[in-house]
Image 1 (cartoon, protein in one colour):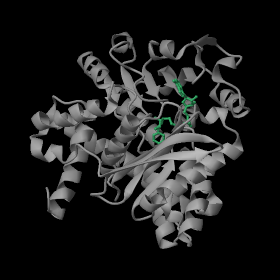
Image 2 (cartoon, protein in one colour):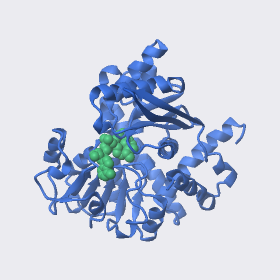
Image 3 (cartoon, helix red, strand yellow):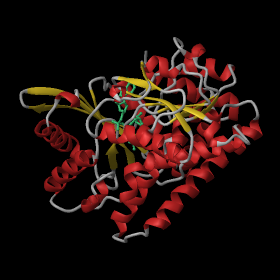
Length: 410
Ligand code: NAD
């Protein structure tokens, strides 16, 4: 199954929904630059990619993923979503993504460093603060970014902290970046509750969160602190369920000690599949793509779904869920807090100015809530589209406007 094919179909559907011409849509149907390499580390060869999908609105921007299932189809799809996300977020970036196919859980720190540095060497010619700017994604973090930055700077012979975001604070990163994806998602969750669960108090709202990493863990913590009842969560090894709500603070501390979620001494163990089918008010998807497909879509009981992960619902499932009247907050809005704060970090690196943290916190909130409002108002205006289609239309309109201003092919 090709994830990218799904994306093209979602894109083409916009012609009938917003009158965007098929010719214009075809301008977005392929990536601008696909770079591939085999990273040779310790006698092994690891396939690696950096795909710059579009640079119409600015340099490429998007994370690097380390995962045994990484493929070109996946990286290209993630790069495509970054284009839409950056456009919708109204920040001056095109879109890109990278990945290395290997199992980081089987690698020690020396190997992780060697693979990160090999990645920087392989893709140095296509990276740079004005070309394409990576960031963390699944199983990469600020340490990975630091190794890549260090290797890149030693190759180009000058400091260039703006070539990567999600760096440690000491190397030009900003504190806000660590939980920014979840912080943005949390503002969106509040807006969604206000709009679609009016009058319902947090303590009466039951939530399940799939994935307990950077996105899922911080999201669960924020919702828990706000009084929401988190009845289930999971990581790659499985999940746990507790009818009257989990103590997320205790679970975070347990996970930070290197334990798996389903070894926690509260509630009962469940599988990731069971978690998705729980009867909850809000299901937060914060793991990987294609978690809800035609196989399980009709078993989903949650009425409201927030996509904190990229692409967790495939096209076939999307149609089934839409027909069932589910409210799905799309990834390109829900998880855009990460790249918005990456933009703050990059802007700070470019100007050398240090911006006030409270100012940036407010700016993130303003952008997230403002982008929600724009998506919702088009959704209401058109009345026959989903929230995802509304977000896609807004994103595509901005990219096409930039293409037309540039002239040439458009
Ligand atoms: P992470 O590596 O910090 O955490 C991933 C989590 O998912 C871990 O808890 C892992 O155990 C769990 N997981 C892996 N496979 C799973 C499976 N099959 N079922 C259930 N759980 C599984 O990664 P992250 O940064 O939290 O990324 C999660 C999702 O959020 C990805 O889709 C990523 O692209 C997206 N995202 C992340 C950011 C960011 O800033 N980190 C920004 C935007 C979007």
